[in-house]
Image 1 (cartoon, helix red, strand yellow):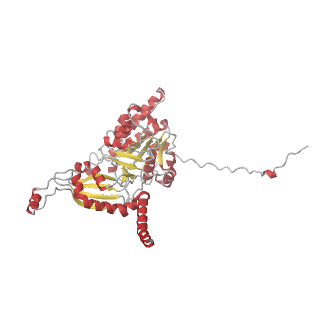
Image 2 (cartoon, rainbow, N blue to C red; image 1 turned 30 degrees about the vertical axis):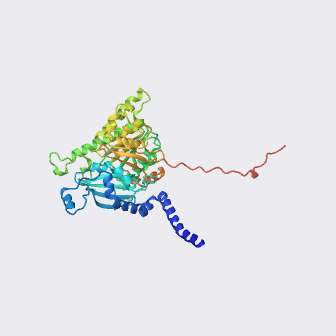
Length: 464
């Protein structure tokens, strides 16, 4: 009996230890578990049940005439045609599966079956993208990569005005590209992650040759720590109006510069004619400007009729910048909790110019519709499912209808402030914005405490 017990212990103990270790790794170290266990099991499951899964998900078509003739001639049953696997690439978070579509299929057929494929193969997420006509890629994610965000290492520089600021749900980095999407809108409730996204943007832009401008009507508490790297900062509506007017003057001067280099009537080659600053010679090209507007509602709201004129001028200046500044290399990043017609005249017009949309957790459905209603109804629904215990989670999209789920990594305010101070030498001096250049406040003087006299040395009062 003792020998049998000893043998059972020898067999059960390693199995229990292995199972417990796998369970622990799955919850505490999901990447390691995926590479060691999840990936081989998933690849094996795909190869084993591929034809059956395709048929169950409705991704089969009738075999071609010649295939049917061959199977009939060889007395074999004719199998329906399925998409052919044209490549599998494994990653640390999932795998990429390329499929050659069968005759008569389209990308939408695979997209509609994505949720069924996800359940059939037991993976966390599955998205479909078209590589070229007839060839699609299935991006499979093995675990929830947004639970603990770890940005992948970028092998090379993402390029000017391109910043990796968040992680997508499929494990790829989300790049904020101002050349492709010049103006953006960031919406979200308090503690939803708006400020964290802005911090990551500032952190990524600080080492680049770009001028950073801040408008923070909360007395500068959000953007003042970035002062060493800011070319201009406004901390109340009056300063904001002056700064926006200065930006309009800067924009007009840049258009004059572009016009002077257009070569009319033929002073330069035809291929050198340009309509934006990026076609100018590098030696005369002005530095691009990114403007961060915090809490846009503070620029729209008025306390009385005395503030209406200032509000109208603020809104007009913002709309002019949003409509005209792209070619001049001036880009807007606007943040707020709500941004709709309830803010007043001009709000809807300004919002329509902000192509990039990022919506965090919101307090009501209408706020989600303000940001993503004109992009996708599914994106609006996804926004309402963001949990309060997942700050930084957001739905990002643009007016093309594409959208995805992202989450920004945590970055402390002190870390971004130190990063801005380290790259303070990159801050360009813009003559039109010089009056709004913030200056770091001097360190407060340390007053040494007065020396204290021990109680036993204090003389006793004289007695009569």
